[in-house]
Length: 220
Image (cartoon, rainbow, N blue to C red; front, side):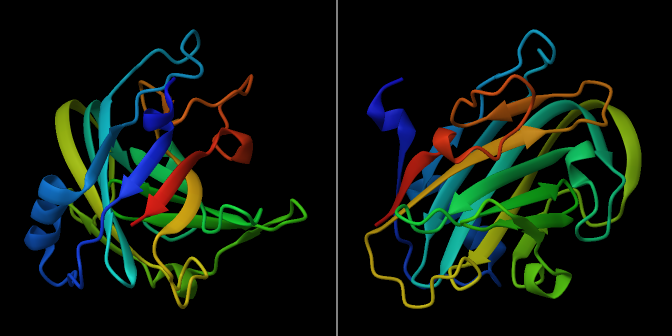
């Protein structure tokens, strides 16, 4: 893999506001950086490969990520924060806000915008991010926000997330800002369970929370 595919150069959008969702999605399409989530680390056991991409940009205070998915099954049973959304049709990310500090966060979001989150401390311990803290993240889900059992068919959906940089512990950002991270797609509870990532993950079983497998993310 060449160095270009391991590095995200994330452009600045200026002070776009999430109240105009269409403007942000269009801005991400036109000016954001786009990558495909297509690394099948456990291909022999989980060969299913739904098309998944993400587009990314930032303002002075917010990180915007728009995930797009095309898949055969759609599931959204979990509707409360910090429930097992990874069982549903789900996208997610690990973000290490400062490349030179070992602290990072994991966020998983199902197709109706339900979020679960963990904070990984420097000593290797993990803690659940409280619901009131997760509420700082804004999600726009094309599937709406009502839970449903698994559906079979051909589905396309997207999740637009707006993550305040302050949520990541960056209160006075100085650009360019170097981060690390990975992005992924999973759905362990569907009829076609799958586990895909942007950066390849070297693990014998599905696991995304491996900082050694993070790519470089630079906010311009």
